[in-house]
Amino acid sequence: MSYQGKVVWVTGASSGIGEALANALLHSGAQVILSGRRVGELERVAAAAPDRALVLPFETTDYDALPQVVEQAWAWRGRIDVLINNAGVSQRSLALDTRLEVYRQLIEVDYLAPLALTQLVVPRMVERRTGHIAVISSVAGKVGTPLRSGYCGAKHAVVGYFDALRGEIEQAYGIRVSVILPGSVQTSVAVNALVGDGSSRGRSDANIENGMPVATAAKIILDGMAEGKREIPVAEGKELAALHLRTQDPERLFDMLAKEGARLATLREEGRSIDPSDIRSER
Ligand SMILES: NC(=O)c1ccc[n+]([C@@H]2O[C@H](COP(=O)([O-])OP(=O)(O)OC[C@H]3O[C@@H](n4cnc5c(N)ncnc54)[C@H](OP(=O)(O)O)[C@@H]3O)[C@@H](O)[C@H]2O)c1
Image (cartoon, rainbow, N blue to C red; front, side, top):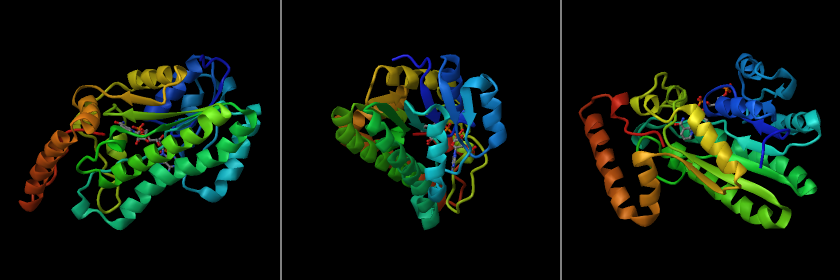
């Protein structure tokens, strides 16, 4: 599949992976709907090809506003060929230190919001008997990683919903569903990650800074989608290995994760901060 002329809706297009996807899509000749909350940032991205970009800001968890937002997106070119549910927020806090409200927020932003948007777009795609839905889950959607219990829960839920949806609409209506599993990618994800009291972490960490360049991640995602892949790992090194271990030798993986958890618990018991450099991977 070529993206030339396709109408593609990208959420979270104001930074990071979503911005890189939007840039690559605009470069490929696609018509791109850019969503996020920061209008100025969306306009900056749209400036690359203003005649083929629609800036459509919205808060993804404002479910009451969604029907009107979807109406506007669809009306722009009379269709949506591809929806990429990318907007999301991560976490950096131990379960022992994390308030219930934080879990609720992660489930809302990372699971219910992409589900709600997809639920409104799918019936229109079903009517046309064509379309492609993608969602950015994470390696954390397959591997339960210390410091990310709420994020992992939400990203695992994403995999479950979108895999089940694919089963229902792929053969029946010709609609593709791609689940994307990135490891560490160089974005603001760690800066924006929630900590135990619900505030943003406000600083990055070594794994993200040393992660995959965001343009490389966007290329792997778009190439994989163009090939019609149902699941697209965007990871290398130990993060890719963790994905394989999860199915091939889960006990070994659980041992490794427990060791990491014990190290973090020791820091906590000693009253020392869980320093960014102690965080081994963004999944
Ligand atoms: N970077 C990684 O290592 C990594 C690894 C695995 C998975 N992921 C996933 O990749 C996706 C993109 O993250 P990123 O790494 O590019 O981080 P990022 O730079 O922090 O980007 C997050 C994007 O999501 C949007 N967003 C967040 N909350 C939103 C809300 N409530 N309503 C509307 N838009 C919202 C933000 O836009 P506004 O601020 O303008 O609203 C921003 O464009 C996320 O789903 C993340 O979980 C990232």
